[in-house]
Length: 336
Image (tube, rainbow, N blue to C red; front, side):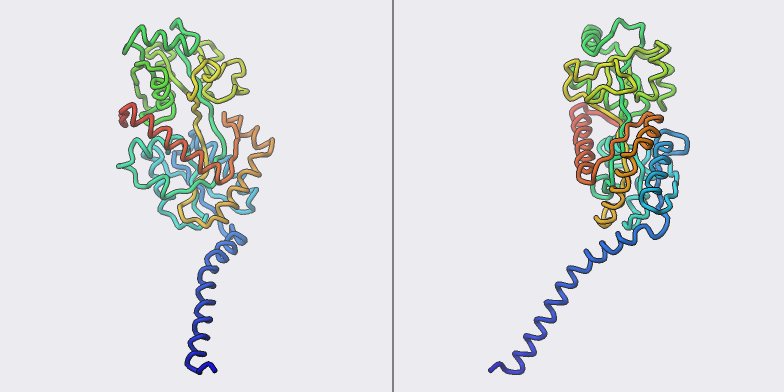
């Protein structure tokens, strides 16, 4: 016979077990319920640059498409400054409930995360999580047409014959345009001197004018100069040729394996945002941006819509960080 004291202990143990199981189950249930009701209020989409720039224009398209697909209002808020770090830090500190998101140039953030990691107020990998890569802006290597250079191989030959005399422009120390050329220098083993400008406009002006000799630039910024003959394209830096410049070969085609760089764009959420909510945002983005009219609208801004799921977005962001950390480390590159 079981004594009353033992029976009471057994009842208490069973009750405690149920409570423990419930305690572990409730967070998942709460997350799923929160996702079912999401969004129940406006979503803030922080664009970490001033109005009118490329990220702002792209972000407004993404915000509109996300709003339509997810069935809730998306409010655009510009938080410019510090190369995008002010807006990114605000999102990193936000409540992780899916109602504050970042629309960012992920390549630039990846560069800054490794180039200036001691001076930015957030950790890209620990404080933010990708809700989805949405697309990319391709880069193209160009030269002033006065140079006797028509391919990447000829650029290498010229640079080696004139060590330290060839200059390349960029739109800023941590810009993808600068880092793409730094990667090329390491792959090709050449010395081309960096000249930083405050934006693509002044850099392109001096490149066309012959004050600098070469540059890697986004296709939207360079295409009018290419078509007018003011700049000569050497290669697009995407894995495959692109519709905007179909006759220009890739770097890969010219024998430069690994020289594939695009300016990547995506939506980020604060770390700790429930996975079902992140998944719901991702599904809305991928569904909306897979539509032909959305692709056409993005391409008008020079962006190739290429939405990725959550896991693929995380893998792509990690690959970006690792690539630029390696380039920065091996090149001894600083934020100047």
